[in-house]
Length: 229
Image 1 (cartoon, rainbow, N blue to C red):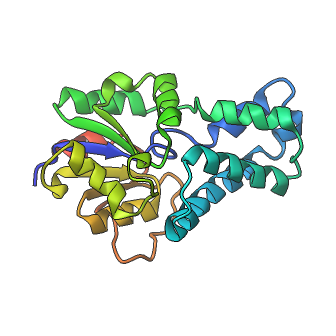
Image 2: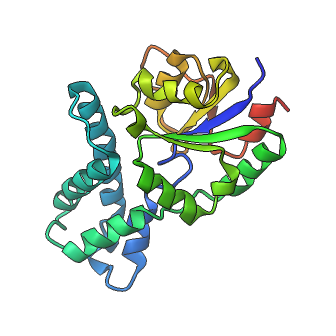
């Protein structure tokens, strides 16, 4: 079936979630973070994902900004940096202007040139997503930025994936859903989307009921994959 719409997860897929810690460590006054930034970034991200799953399962929803703050506090304590208020504030500020991966602007531009509709579907809160999109300068390359806050539950709940059909009516298989999270790509595959897992770290395939149809090292092949060229 022909792909009409390319839908992207945001954090870790379009935006480099390690960028906030990396940039803060390189700034003047970042010496306390310099030897810990990689560990902090990894723990921060792991806890973000874990907390969204817990809140989705228990029904204790809050927005992703609160989850981001909570998971950062855990990561700061785990790396011995809890109590450094200035560092915490700086990391949170940088998270709202994460670097896009270098191939993102050209990849999105090629999709648009091919007449493809494009969107973000993210756990992110609307304000967070707006800041990230604006900072990366990719707003003109997107038809929609969809947040789970429309339904009040995190991925991989099917109500999140339903948002795509509400904004872009059509067959689910006409949607190419792209995520750097193996569990997200698996959930979207089970939902009926055509899926691509961007496996930048060369991780093993998740042992889940569904698997993505495509596995990529980065986003560069997405336009050819979407258009069948």
